[in-house]
Image (cartoon, rainbow over all chains, first blue to last red; front, top):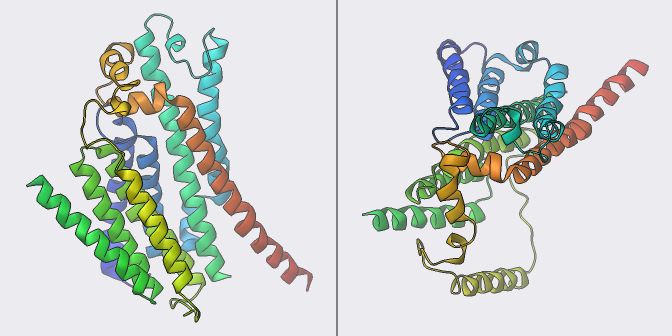
Length: 140
Length: 183
């Protein structure tokens, strides 16, 4: 679809806003509907749109497959790491109260922010990876 | 008013479900399942489950449809019509449906405050979470903090799915290109 000028221009215009909306959903999940899962999917949707318009090769230059595959694991590790942090600071696994030794509520906020980030990273990179695999399969 | 909306949305969902079963064009079937997801997201919104509706709209109507279309590009867009007896499968489906409907007879009324699910841990979450966790969105408090283990399991499932696809699809392509090099 590289020759479709309308699609290209509109996609270029929309992609930054899709990414921004994904970040908003990610970090505003504490206050409004949303969270890591939805944000990850929306973030991946921007890359899917980019791939559909500009082709797989161009998209792979933006989101390097090797890096994305590493990020798949990074998200889960961030989640588990937050949990283990709780053990190291003297609490239970995934106990956020101990993350901030002044105020347990702040610890909860920090813990939730971190694990939601982990969820978002894993979901976004898994979706991008799956889409790349499927799209790449069609070409070869 | 809400009841009327419910009836309209659910009627559309039933119509779409039957259409998907009858259609042999898989492209149209996938698009219709996307619309089905969007309708169920609307139903979730009416039920005040906005977080679930958000997920359904993003995953069910969005990414899942795209991935199914991506799969379709690798296969054919027409279903292979299977010749054979449909009586037995039909009986199984009708029987399963009847059992499921029989099961719903035992369920509490929608919104019943005395239902078991509202008596167990929910009151504690509602009363304690503003002070314990202090987030306005209680769904996030439950998902990320009280039920952190469950969410960890969920993320692990997604992780496993991603790794599985990489191992199955990514690896075989690399092998093919290696084979080409060897030739």
